[in-house]
Length: 488
Ligand code: ATP
Image (cartoon, rainbow, N blue to C red; front, side, top):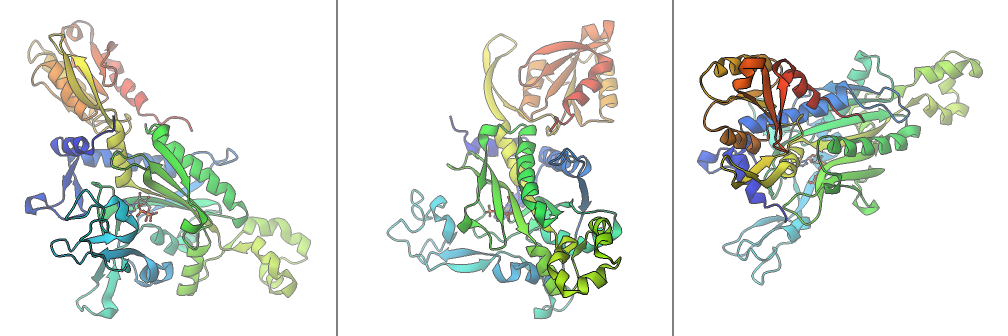
């Protein structure tokens, strides 16, 4: 049976994953807050991405190490960045208004099918006989602000609508301050803002969200190889974190869907419960040299890359050691690109909030387990991958006496140095298990009478609800083993 989104939303509110922003004032459309467990879940997602993409990226197409570094750019940049990137001129969605009294709704013209008429919710806008929709007009999605005390046209600035442009604007800085050679990638995680016409589907389409983006710079001759490689690795990354491959769909954009600069784009989509069709989690785009070309043109700064290794290798054959002298000869004009070029860019661009929502949907499970009296009881559990689970283990003393709390506290203190763990000594153990199941804690560790005799504890597995006894000193290693990333 299809999962009801209401169940996810209710669990997220009840257990502190996601709250509506400024809820006590009636909220604000398109903005969300992460509660105590949500902030841990999202942080684990961002950490997994940073670790698996930047610090320990997968081996490249020929098994070689690949070079990746990170950046953390400002949210507000010189507005000329957004002129160069094309956002000032063209970052817009088609919008229609409904003129009908009592509706006055505003919709994205290309998403009317998924929207509801305000007066007749069983119909889409435009389908109800009273709908009076205007012609579509372009609505720029960038949030504007002013920098400095004077608010006029010269002080207009924008909240960044994507993290990518900060990377392009710093391309030369990164090259000049490191020993990186093409191919290499620059990654960034950070907030982006879009004044979406219709924020909806919970956190899926928000006005403030976080992106996890890589710009991978490569030789144009090798760009198709890297495009395919990144697309495959990024799909694999989602599977490694527990998303069933049957729920994931890579969708190659058709020629008429592609942005004008894109040589190819694959959307990695997830079958969210709120839609009939899979929806975009991430776009992997082959952007050619469009962005560096635009910034080179608008800034007047040379952003080309010089392949010193290739020049050193070949120069003897040209009878000169000077690239400048060689390049100045008209007969070499076409060959210059073998040594000096604008790199092509492959961009895997993912949404941290969209993936968090996918993880919440994917994890949600219901089953029946026997309670202490042996009667079957409904349970809800969140089957998070241990790497993503907000709390890795919960420690329970079976009873609050006979030295058990002391032992349990000692284990708790030991484990919390390395992991986020919980301590719970309230109520029957069965209840304590249920509380942890509902927030997706993979392991529950109970200190009982036998612990006092032989220093062993029980570890109960969230998904199977099976228990096994292990020596107390091995508990940390057991948890750590579950957190090791899978092989690529
Ligand atoms: P969509 O077609 O859904 O509006 P997009 O193609 O404009 O998305 P990109 O510009 O490619 O999105 O942004 C890259 C990623 O950033 C998306 O795959 C998504 O995960 C995330 N993202 C984009 N817009 C939003 C939003 N409004 N709310 C949450 N995440 C978003």
